[in-house]
Length: 255
Image 1 (cartoon, rainbow, N blue to C red):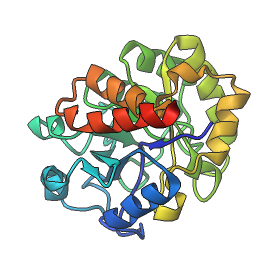
Image 2: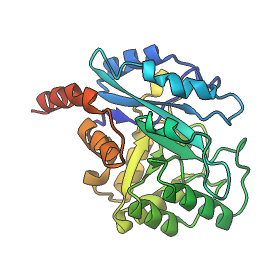
Image 3: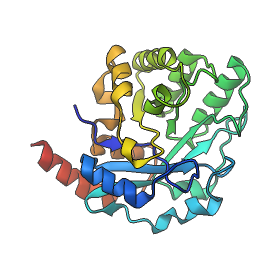
Image 4: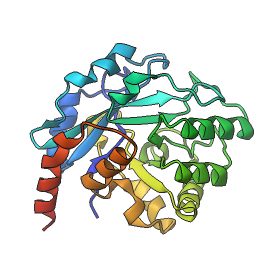
């Protein structure tokens, strides 16, 4: 199965990434990707864009040349209380909110602290997807996190980049996460965590994790634009009607 939805990408607005949004759109067209989220790092990261970058995402069209673009952020989990570095009514203006641990913002501590911070973030209601929860630098109680995520309709990510260029040693944790989410009745999503347009929607190794865990594909958010948009709608995100043209084209191409 070819997955045509990617929830996790970074542009040159995060200066350790190397492609513009327009280059991502062109690559999406080339690869047949129907929907992707632009999710640059939250403003507490050292080289992240300013807070206003995310406020002004409202100027982006939601569909360009048949490609859907979700206005999003990969926020930073800041502390054990589960706070993130984007807040208030501004969150309601975004189409998708990701959050995860990043060393410059939340230094690795111990399993109990990481678990409490992640669960508190999930319980906050502010975050749709937890990014790279399998990072071995941040051990967590996987069963407890999967249960909290399922109860709060929050998806956990299998991060393809973690198996390639960062967070090495994530495989074992990610298989355990996929199995725990399956058992808890929750949702998974695969994220490319692309920092250059060439890796958009590259889920080669993440797919192997999903397959090894025998995770039910009807609970994998990448399976279609409709699945992801329905999830975001269930999470309270509005203004998604503009993507309806994608659903029509996806249905036509699937027949």
